[in-house]
Amino acid sequence: MIELRNVTLKYGEKVILDKVSLAVQDNTIKAILGPSGVGKSTIIKLMLGLIKPNSGQVFVDGVDITPMKEANLYPIRRKMGIVFQGNALFDSMTIAQNMSFFLRENLRLPDEEIRRRVMEQIRFAGLEGYEDQLPESLSGGMKKRVAIGRALIFNPKMILFDEPTAGLDPVSSRKILNLITSLKKSNDLGAVFVTHIIDDVFAIADEVAVLYQSKIIFDGPTEKLHESEHPFIRSILSDKILEL
Amino acid sequence: MASTFIGNYVDSKMLRLKELLLTMQEFFYFALRAFSTLPKAKRYWRDVLDQALICGVESIPIVLVSSISIGALMSMEVGNLLEEFGAKTMLGRSTSNAVLRELGPLLMGLMLSARYGSRNGAELGAMQISEQIDALRAFGTDPIAKLVMPRLLAALIMFVPLIALSDFAGLQTGALVAEYYHKIDPGIFWNSIYPRLAPKDFVVSFLKAPVFAIIITLVSSFNGFSARGGTAGVGRSTIKGIVASSGLVLVANFYVSKIVLDIMH
Image 1 (tube, rainbow over the protein chains, first blue to last red):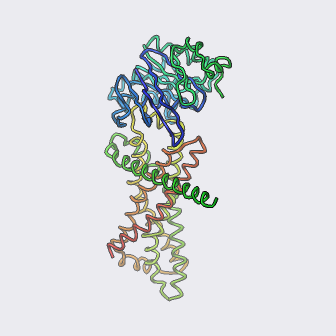
Image 2: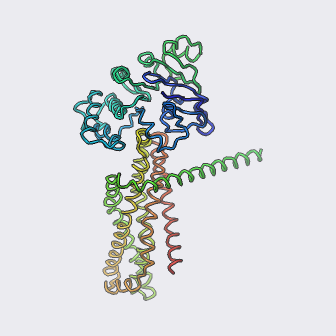
Image 3: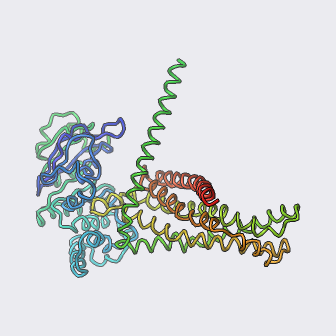
């Protein structure tokens, strides 16, 4: 379980998050919905301890990670996988090397075991035959699947997705959303996904938190979103776009 | 009206000063972290070798171009000047002082700042912008140990032989220009160098190698790590890195010479 408690984050004088509290239960898909540039991706980075809040706490499985030093955060981070918006694949490495890199870096596993785990993820991502190719030769949807495979390499309990369908065509988007849903069903994984596309939220999210003007204005089951009276939520439900 | 203008001006200058001090503090911690990861060199030896190839072997042409041009120029110009005083036999000594102690290492430092520093800045900046550095941290790898330490160690190792190569090429070119342009016998040229060479000449020259390695690698890497704002941000951070490291190389070149020559006078 990941929990943000009264988290405030500022860049200079600009308040990005203002006393934000939210929790993500295990084996739950939670969406964080909001307009572009509102600080949704920042929430994911806070959950991983990549950035520190100015005030408030971030708990991962009941442990407050906010005062932790970088080196102590590494084992905590391995409980979560992350898929960055631009995938953040290493462009000088092949697909298989991208997936095996962090295994070799962090775990002393025999080569055979590393190969087994990598092939497992390559099969899961439907990328058999592409393992020796460089990321630049893949389509956007395939790169995203490589990034998802890499995120699964430590067998995490939770995966964090930053705008998983941004920039993808409708077919690839659908494949990625199905992949996220299948992860929950087959691997008992929880997921947090940040998005500005409301259709994606209704397609796969169990819960949704809406971030608007640095605050969480809704946090609850996705189906309850329609009951909200907040003007911003009413407007996005009617227009179904968030590019305000 | 005037007091408001002055107040705003002072406020903006104070803000700039505060930002500068904060950046210096961040750089100091960054440098400390880079040095503290040196014991991990064994783990990242492949990266160290890769970087040694880039900053060492691949830099040989540019180092040769700069040292050959400075050796030839010094020999030609100083020879013309000494001729006026009938002291052309001292050309070797004058050329060696300039090539070994000052202009040779300085020009090499500036060339490496442009070549190796820009490569570091652009590569790390692109990795920062594309969140690859965040990915390293997110999956439990220390990006300073993986990306900065190998660059630093490789530069510390490779800049010493590069300086030696630069000194050798500069002096050889100076000797050739002395022989064919000033018609000075090579024996006379080299005899005016060898007996007068002192340990301080080599200390000044070779001490600049690690100093330049630290400046160029850490400044360019720090600027790469600080890149923000898309591809334009990579360009800005790369330029900032080159300008800052070149300026610091110039300043360090003076102080290393001054300190060593004061101590070993």
